[in-house]
Image (cartoon, rainbow, N blue to C red; front, side, top):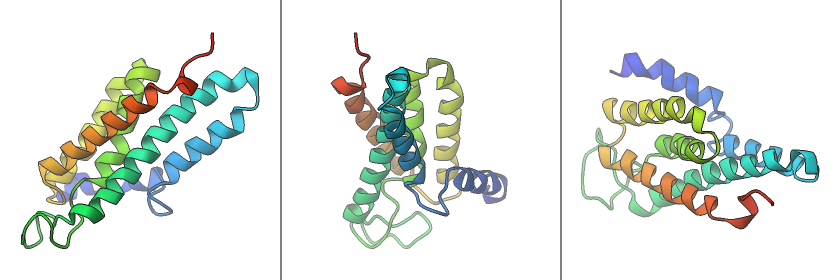
Length: 161
């Protein structure tokens, strides 16, 4: 399965800036938001970008921090217990793409299906190529859902009357 999904995942990694930084996508979206906020005309767009960028950046950051807490080995590594010396739990790739889907449910309903397909494809491929357990990608999806929901509740991200 590595040969079937590997090139697609690699193309997604390059497209989303992984070779530069795992946080590049979220950072670029946040900077774009901050650049637009001073202009009243673009403030609705800035709010949406702030919402998407903050959710994506935060979910990726939380997943990265939790990797260093749990230290779960990857499926292909020798399993010596949940807290050993690995970086499987939670999945960084899944934490990177699920916030786009959850934000789309709220901000871009028309994009929810393509973004669901993207996040699901990345998550399933990480399990199929034996880089993650199913629980790793499910945990990342849960992190993304919680973070996105939290940001959606913030008053600054709601439309002004």
